[in-house]
Image (cartoon, rainbow, N blue to C red; front, side, top):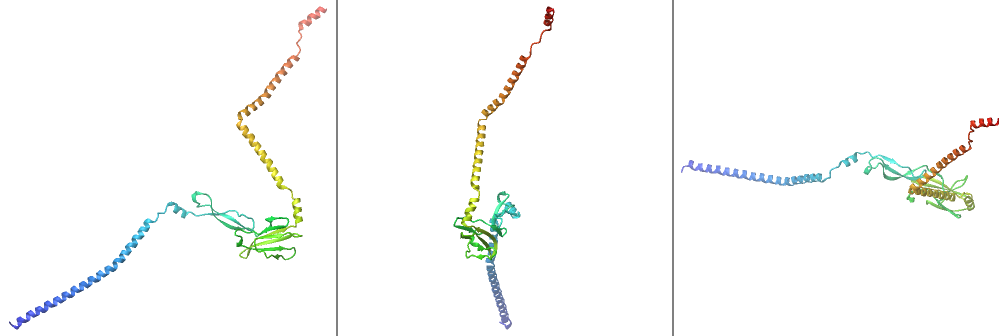
Length: 297
């Protein structure tokens, strides 16, 4: 063999080896790239699944939500109008109703929404005791329930002098009668603000007896008048019921009563005619008078 022939196969072997190495490197790179892509897909897969799950949940919630009816839409669009009722007091603290005049359920024209507190003028003047006897008097301040919500200040009012503040801070005050009349005043405070004030006069036992004796007994008179009125109303009702039940008999009775005067008037007219005909004298014949006069001659 020649040296040239020996070198050719060696070069060929080197070329083939280089090609094999290049093929192995390319195959290894392809595998690495595929592995990286598979890992990325594996990471993206759960995220896409979660997004799809969230989308499916939202669509299910939207489908499960009850559809809004026309009444709900109309109720949201209705403008509610409020009207306030009359306050239960003319002074101090009371309550009033809050009425809804538009948008009531069931098509009602008015409905009560709530009850709230209302206030009038502070000064309520002179009041009356809630109970009294010859020995003591029970007085009450102006308040609403609950009573412990307010603070109360009782004063003993003295003419031309400063009032004396009493120790009692409750809404009720019991006072024993003295030998001279006394005047008390109660201030009702809410958040240290006077919202109502009222005064009372506590008379002596003798003055109370005199006032009771001089006072007319209106209760007995009122009861008597009411009793008489009820008796008269019941009597009239019974008469009306009797007339309705026995209408035919009543009608015939009144018809006979009406016909009787007419018959009596007809009989009286006939009798009058007969009496006038009897009272008239017969007319004398003229021929007889002439014959008698000639015979006498």
